[in-house]
Image 1 (cartoon, helix red, strand yellow):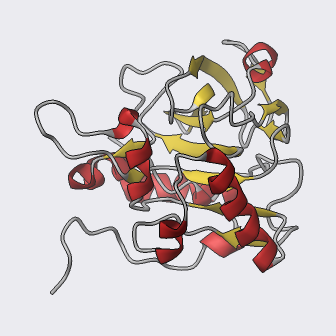
Image 2 (tube, one colour):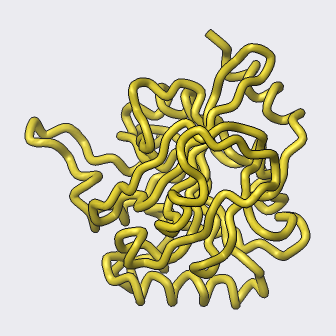
Length: 245
């Protein structure tokens, strides 16, 4: 099995394209904090999409940014808005730890393949709070197979990039969906790297239980290894399941 350090070395050296219509280092980026520790999140209900959207655009405007990004290994209590992430009947903890990077931009913005790949699977994950239209690309590097997931797309993306389509890096994959299509979220791209797809197709957990962080973060390396957004390159404290003394 490929180790985390091996994946980091492989991915960080790959030539990549931007998933958006512009290079990610060509515009100011608002590093968006949606963690449980951000007191600003108590001022609105994230289940009200218009209020959530207004908050994001206010953050971007305050930073003079062209887009917002963030979220890898971020513990987000806002997922309580959707039963998709809730604790199960046996009482296991809710899923709150985010496994990808979100890039927040206007609905209809184009989305591009970050790496050359083939469409492995696609699906409209239509439960409230889920991904909405989702495309999973398959890649092979030095004999290692891995995947990238693009969530919260417009439905037209599933027609433009059907299963089996081969894309080059930078090629148009689809477009960002509206809140009505991406089931309650402000427009954004959820981008995730997956080293073990398990038995999923057109879907994959983008949020895990905090107690299972080590397992899922090992399966899903930091997407900024490919995105290389300067604002997200600053060192961050590793996620801890228990507070330190």
